[in-house]
Image (cartoon, rainbow, N blue to C red; front, side, top):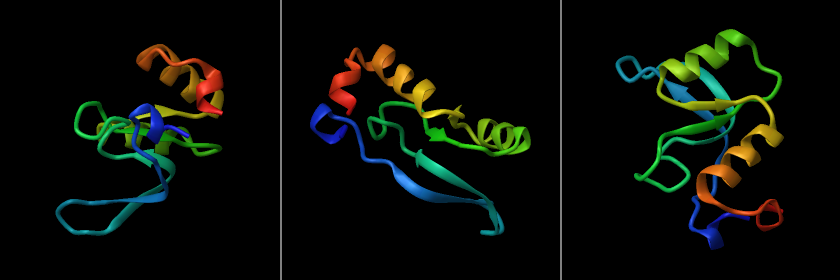
Length: 88
């Protein structure tokens, strides 16, 4: 979907680990830990049906969080000036 538009393909079931211990802290549904444009934008994650605690944790870890696909697509459209048709 997005690679032809210059956006990195996301990771499914990304495991965020504690940098010091290596212990698993949370699993994100879909994420871009290096940003949608790798190295040029902030980390982003889509978290569906997860608790507010997980959303807060992801946010503290530096991720911009979305809890719906619609909300995420709107972010992409407004941030990168794409049409929704291009994201289908």
